[in-house]
Length: 406
Image (cartoon, rainbow, N blue to C red; front, side, top):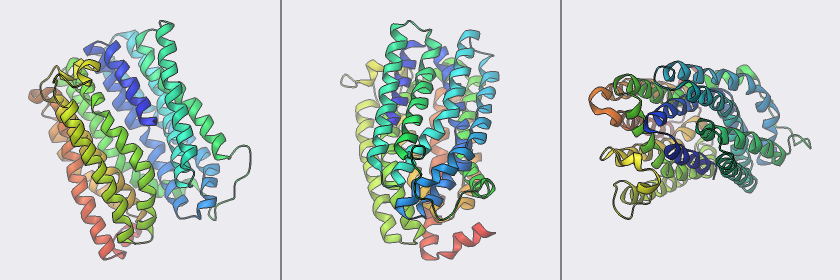
């Protein structure tokens, strides 16, 4: 439901913005995805791994430390929006760029913290409370979109504006549902310290941030080489591919903690079940969705919802395939992280960067296809290398830990 909220705003953006305006929105969306990585990976990801190693009944107490420690990095993440401002100012209208800058900055600041609180509820065995947070998030997003439409708010304020409002309200609800404000939860065995989290999180930031940064670079390259309208087509195709990401994100929230617990215990058999289930469900659903939404045939509902995604033949299908490949990384990265393989993740992501950049550099002749191509190539390289690292870890459990200590 939380991912569906983002999908809903994307659908609205694709219908109320022109092709070139949608391209400017795509620049800010790529910057938002990059900016939210700072606190998410530097603080929240290592905090969640620390929580997994605690008894279930005390895990939610980690929020008492992590929420405060994440404020600074969340603020730094907003700088990505300023980079988008400089790129978009060359191709976008001043009013459009100003509205997207302000609303995207608010969303970038609050999104990762709201996401962290929701994941912590799952990790703490309180998944129904996490569902409550997601329900509030989706409901407020849809209400905000509706109210802004009725109030005739300028279109540039609508997509990120509704997301910002939803994130602020659902974050407050999540904190209340976690009990970290109105009662004192059982304290974890280990208190979180900023530098301790950063030492682990810096590798997560490189590992997860590098491919996201490459998407941002790909969008910037496309804007320069192919123009804002090509970025708009790619953004429309990315939006119609989001149902695959919606499913993958939801499955990862529930299945990743199980894989992480098994990896931390060096239990290959227990880790393989959630991993196989995650891959099987995503691939099965992804293939079905490719048939439904990949081409502009008569029974494709997305053809009517986001017609811009089908302006370029085969682009929608390519975007869905790229999204499916990239979402398969989610559980592998979580499992490898729980195996103390953050340095391995960073090295693999860094090694995959030249492949993503090479694909992005084809924008001069591939146009809008450069973005899904860059995502797919980078993801394939990372999946292959991380799967190999996990096989080595379970066969020789000291391998990754020794690398981590080094």
